[in-house]
Image (tube, rainbow, N blue to C red; front, top):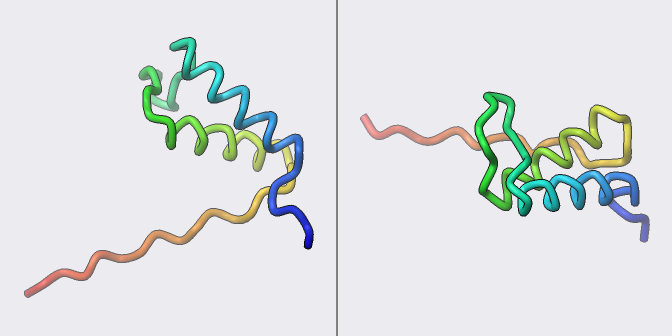
Length: 67
């Protein structure tokens, strides 16, 4: 079975997690990132931009509205 993520993608996520722990990771708006899941998302986004093997982003589900 083939791996879903490349080792390089894993390194990007690891670096983002390390920066978050040190308090140096910033989001696009310039605010400090404290959320673990946001740090992972940033790492995966960087890996995607660098052309590493990462699955496509999951499509957001539409919220059903009650009339």
